Image (cartoon, rainbow, N blue to C red):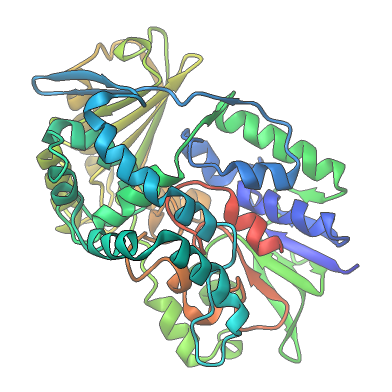
Length: 454
């Protein structure tokens, strides 16, 4: 038994704390906000949460069928069901890779360094053998493709493609025509399945209950300002009020960049690590709008993608790429129980001229205009809009990125965030890394917390 501190009270932080406590540690979880949950308040989609992680954590939750996706756009109005016959051939190919992708998520990323232990390579090697030569070559072919080209091969019309692609791009910095966007789409859909009944709120209730039952000490309004080291090893953390929580082990779930470049004394981080983590990309391009609705939008659909086709998404990405305000952002809408959450794709963190009041008003107007093309917005009340800059300021999300790091070919598996940290290690004795900036990637999985806790 030892003393451990977990930094961050989101879902992955709670998962890490529960895993450590189950192994006999005395665990303290520190959350900077007054409420637990972190970015979970921004994400309504639980379909990528992995059942094996829920089982291992011992969470008391129920599963339900994922809601159908309603697609609305110019000349388009359709509902995409899991058994949609027109998508069956493509879904069959996704299904052929599912076991391998899920299997990779159950182990820490392989240590591919020359001095890395051979044993860490075995899960990936076994998964590769099970995949077989033909499917392995096909995966190697799909990975570098742009999503639009890949779905074109299956004769999926560009409007329907928009509904399949947009949810997979929440954690990326790319559009449907960007190289490797096919990989993001493949991983997202391979990891998707049933949804948690009651959504993210039910998940957080179950995690809190499990943490309390495991004896985890939870402190909110506890902003960690420094990870303390003694002779190169972790000795505890210092809080904003000057108090210190002593520990032999600290696991940070607030993102690799923030952890190693802000919470650790720069003199304790090697130049090579500083360079590697400084190059780890986390550029947010998704704004978040939430509101209450007297009359449901679209009318009452739980999940709606608002996009004319892939061109509309690509143009929204172009706006973010060139750091200009999106004129017609692509939208993803989630709603239940009189509340709506809207993810607006195309809002650059590093907007030219910054996120001034005028820029925020223009973004809000653009979102409302796109919504107004397809549904009655008169019942929307108590609207709160958060740009990527707001997400960084309010929730500490580096770059305003929803997943602490972009999904891309060079930022997943062993490179999430870096081969030297593939086992959720930081290079500093006693300091571990968890959260969505670490392996695996592909959506909100809850897996990183379990792996980091191990």
